[in-house]
Length: 299
Image (cartoon, rainbow, N blue to C red; front, side, top):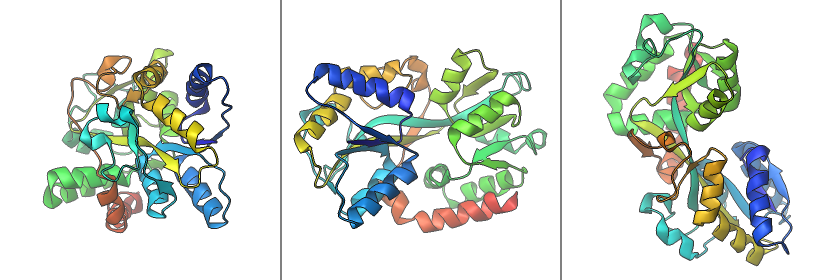
């Protein structure tokens, strides 16, 4: 059983590639957003219901499960090809893909020349009342606080919160609202989602505001997995170059350093920073308080 936050139109083809390689294994998928998946797994384990074999999802949600001791260490030679920041020092997860938070805008409403090119450009009065953000991107704030320092980050987010932001739950929903013209622009859009919509002819484009915040999605092996050997075959597959190429063909930004995203500019040509998941969760209460105070509470 695979638990994942990856959309079914992407997770199903990935699983189909795996089962073609291992036709004797049948894979069931439970898909929901990362928070719901992690909460379901935690609830099941507290009830001593051990259904899941592999959890592939946003790093924050996987680490929540690991902090409950519902995962286990695993070894795969595939992990050796990944950079240090893409691997858990404790051996309980490896990154599979990244969600890059970028600026996206409606091309019918804003030209490329007009669109912001730096974070500070978001503070211009012309964007007041026209900008949206995702409701739960505290990790974006936390990463920029870590990079910029307290004084600069506090000033930026306080001024951003004064821009009469439209706050919406769900990155996909927010991207669709940009396409519909309900929101003119947003700095919290996943670039692979904007690129997919653009490829289908939707009036949307994107650019990185550097440094881009890269949110890792990771794969973990469940403690008491009912099918641990089949589970490890899946872990090996998704981390292999074959599995990573399959993810790239689905438009995802791959974590493997030698497998290029498709198109390559999804993660090339700009600076990005990955998130220290454990440090973020240790300090989540503070970052959530700042997020609510500076952005959500000031709408």
